[in-house]
Image 1 (cartoon, rainbow, N blue to C red):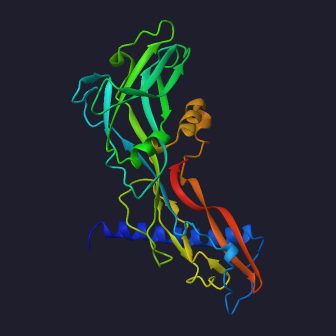
Image 2: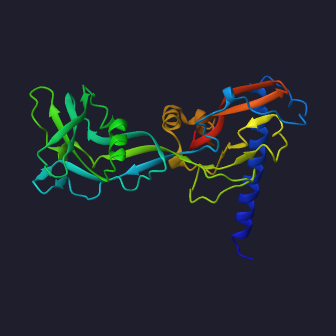
Image 3: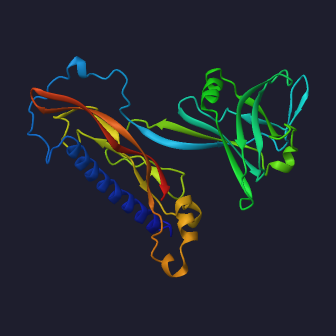
Length: 321
């Protein structure tokens, strides 16, 4: 027997137990949302869904939220075009973003030295004619004081990113300029920025349908992760009164939290507490931090058919909090 088998068996048992608890929790949550203490009486012949309650664009099977980081393609802080070489420019490949996912947000993140009273500007550079550029966004940094050594600047480029994806643009060049607010002179970028900026992309990835209510997919995720978990109303005997959907991905969070995974709130509280009170601060655990809702069509009786949206039914992403 492999020495890893007992560990694998323990993890599988823990995940299965968590799935069972998740199922019971979601059953109670759905009943509570409908102001029911127990399921309605058995309906021998489930009624048809009225056309007015039919959903024409419903997300039945759900999915999970994922965070994708897009770094620069090269270490160079210059972009080469057929026309010229653009300095203080960074090139990104968007090919790793799959078209099957739904982009929820796209932010360009850069870290600069704590320089006061400057303007940070982002330009889109034309891939053929480097001298042609378009302003995407700007960020004003006022007086940051002397206590902070690093400033994080976050540009919301979601609209532009979606447009790039629609036009199937796989390579983008962005130029960064940092200008003094006093005289609008350009600062040396290598002195002001600690590293090349990167993209942080939040996407929604739909799960593939699984007919097993206890199906737990294998994942390469290490640490605190979303575990896909499908609730099948036929298998739990609720398909006579829950007319739609046939099931949904509830998901749950599982995994260990190391010190590097703890969120900023915990780190701040830990730094603020004294040694004698630090032990009273519970360590973060793996838990959902982003939920999704589910639309249900339910029959509380043969002639009492309703459509309702229940929030918080799906765990879409997890964190150590």
